[in-house]
Structure formats: C-alpha cells, structure tokens
Amino acid sequence: MFENYNIFWGDLHCNVHLSHLEDLNEIFEDAKENLDFLPIAYYPMDFYRTKEGIWLESWHNRLEFLSGWEVIKEAVRDFHLPRTFVTFVGYEWHGNRTYYGDHNVFYFDEDNPLDDTDDLPVLFENLKRRRGIAIPHHTAYQVHQRGKDWDYHDDEVSPFVEIFSSHGSSEGCWTHFTLNINGSMGPRVSGGSVQDGLARGYRLGIIASSDNHEGKAGAWGQGLTAVISEDLTREHIWRAFMSRRVYGVTGDRIRLSFYINEHFMGDTFESSGPLRIHGRIIGCAPLDRIELIRNNRVIYTYCHNGSWDITKDKPKYRAKLRLIFGFGPTEWLYHYESDTYKNWYGTLSILGGKILGVEGCFSLRNQKLVVKGENSVEWNLTTEKRIKEAMDKNIQQIIVELEGDLDSKFILRCDNKMLEFTLREAFQKTHIIAMVEEIQDEIKEKFGVSVENIENPDIYWHNAYKVKIERAVPEIGYDVPFEFVDEKPPRGRNFYYLRVSQLNGQMAWSSPIWVYCS
Image (cartoon, rainbow, N blue to C red):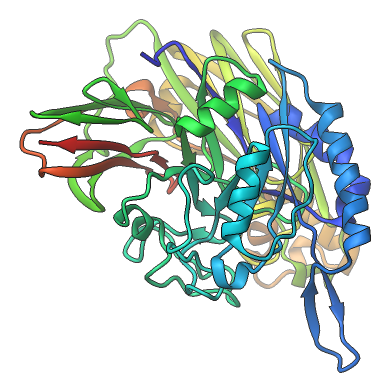
C-alpha cells in the first residue's frame, strides 16, 4: 500500500534559544538544504546566577520569551514552502517537566500560544483544542527527575516518542547506547523507557531527533526522523504524524519499510492466524543485523554481516562509497592558539561510471555539497579542531551512491592532494590521504622545529588532517529484504517493531505494529 509513498526527513528537536534568534535565518537556510521538514523547538528557558552565586535555569522571563515566540512564528511562516520545505512551530514545554517528564509541543499552524501550563494533563486538553501534539523525549531518566511518568499519557496528543537523541537512547535498560552523555541527568533507569510505555499498552510511534542546542538541525549522529507520506505538505506530514507512519535513525538515512499481513508500521489490526512479517532495509553502510521485537523481546534476528560477496561476473555494480574528513591536530599542540576550523575543498570524479546520488553526514552548519552532472561531486566543508577524540564536529562525512564496473576509475582531489583508484580496489580495501606535509610546515612555522630535528616523528601522523575513503559497499551489502512468519503469536494484544544495526554503529527503529490475536 505504501510503496509509492515518499520518505521525508526532519528533525523534531532542533532547539532554538533566545541567543540563537539572530542566527534564525541561517538555521532555517541550512535546514532547507539538508532536510525536508523542520518543526522548530523553541527553548523558552535561560540560565541566571543567583546572588549566592549558583546557576539556575528559569522560564519566568516571560515577556522576553513571548517576544522570541513571535520571532519564531514569523520565521516559520516565512520559510514554509509546500512540496519544498515544510515548517512547523513548536517549543520545549516549560511546565512541571521535573515531575511529568520532558515534552516538545508542536502545532499544526502558527496561530497558537506559548502555553506555560504547569500540569501535563491540562496541557493535553489545551492541545486537543489547538491541533497540537506533545512528544516525550529522553524518557528513561529517573521518573520524577525529568524521566517520563507513564501514568500521565494520552495517545491522541502524543502519537510517538523520541527513542534516541544526543542524550543517547531511551529504548530500554538492556538496549543499545546509554543515557550517560549528560552526566547530570543520567544514568538510564527503569520506569520511564520507551519499552516501559509500550508495555503499558500505549500506542507509541518511534522517532529519533537531535535535541541539539547549538542551532544545527539534523546534526548527524544525534538522531533524525523519517516520515512516510504521500506529499511534502503540512497536511500530509501531520496526517503521517497522527498515523504513526514514522521511524527513527541515529544519523545515516537508513530507508526502512515494515509490514505485518500488509499492514504498515503504525497500524493496528486483528488476526486469527499466522503473521507474515516482511519489509526492506536500504542502508548507508554494510548491514549487520535486523532484530524483530515482539512485546519487548527479540523473537528473531537476521544477521547479514559476512553473508555476501562481490561477484566477479557482473557487467555493472551499484555501490556506496563513504568519505570521512577530519582528524588533525589536538588543542594541546597549539595551546588554543590555532584557528578553530579547517576548510576542505575537493571533488570526486568517476570515469566509466556514474554518480546516482550523494548524502551529507554533517554536524556543522553551512556545509556545501554539489553534484556536477553524472560523473562528479564537489564539496566545500568545515571541520572543527580535534579536542581529543576524532568525533562530532571534528568529523564530516559524504556518502556517494554510484554505478560502474570493476575497472571504473575514481579521481579524488582534496586540498592539493590527488588519489586514483578503481572500483575493484575500493571493494577490496580502504584508502587514506594524510596532510602530513601541511602539519610539518605548521609545526616548523609555529615552533621553529623542522623534520630532521624531531626526535619522534609520530607527532606528524598523529596531528595530520586526513581523508579516509571507506571500502565501497556493494548493493547486496546494504539493500536487504526481510521476511519472517510468526506461526503462533500470543493471544491478545501484541506489538512488533524492527531494530536495525549497521556495521558502522548507525541504527534505525521502526514504529510498532499492534495486532490483536484471537
């Protein structure tokens, strides 16, 4: 039924503070380049220092926050362009979130208030009158300490829940990731998790979103929401929200379909016999496994890793190639005196093949990625200085989907470096470009030390900027159909969802399907 629908990508948790309002146009312009829709999440709270010197968070500066709300609504109106970029207005609820748990409020249109109702049940009733929704997030913190209290929930107003964000995962206590990233709010505990809510019998669709407080919508690796919809309009996207035709990914835009007896994710139906469960996963890296979960228990796991080979007799191959930019010097090398950012300019061309599409995995704004015809892609990227680990804003990535034969040749040019390799070689091994000469020159300029005077040359490789070209993944490695038959499902109400893992650690979760079995 939904094969001809589209997957549209958005971030339902891009936080905009008062301090971000001057960058609001840039935030929306960047989102328009990378996302299909953006329900902005205004953050009407601020920090202040008491006379005793302690920092507290407050939402009582109401006049200033109301003024910012009007600015947010105006920008949402200005940037809304049906079938190109859909916007919604919203905010982080600033009522008694400590007790009830955190929720994001979104409205269908802009003619609605910044509702500071303290009690969640009252907020629910207000939203029913105003065509609004309230989405629980980072639910698996301690209940009554910003975790979700599932005693207070309404499926009509909260059609889905945020399973993953920059905080980590709230799926359950024995599931992937943790909630330890925010050490003040963590750790993850029982009671408020997504699986706790599902076990209560709630119909919870599943999304992931960034919870990014730095003004970058859709920051890679922090969570993204997929919506399955006929069209890119507010009405169609909202209808998909309310029908729970949504799913969540950590960062890579994994395409996922999931059916039971021809009923799609988000549906509820009755059955008196075996359940035919099927779908398809199109990943962005080698697929590791697909887990089928029934009533919070894994009942079947399909392991794809190691089950496929490169066949040598095909005239054409479809594949994905990932380029990773970053690494470079640590802060201690320059004692905070170096520029904060590194700029990357380059192209990847293919001879004897064609580029089918590109995807940016970006965590910073204003990254530029342009396809030049069928044979070339050009980029102008920025990475931040490496603090310690090579991660987050220090790393930016590009995924190129391509078609060619084994002898198709790639030419990679980046920052005055060039690398040539064939598709056959890309299938066999990784490649790397290291800007060693650049760091040698920088160290000589800043410290007056040349190569011949360095006792241990590790410093050059350790602090060199690098471009890594991952092994190419053939289509059979990332495009996987899935099928399973639950011959004797338990009597009564059951829910099923999929959990998908790639070898690079990126994941996806489908929304459940609910089945009443007799």
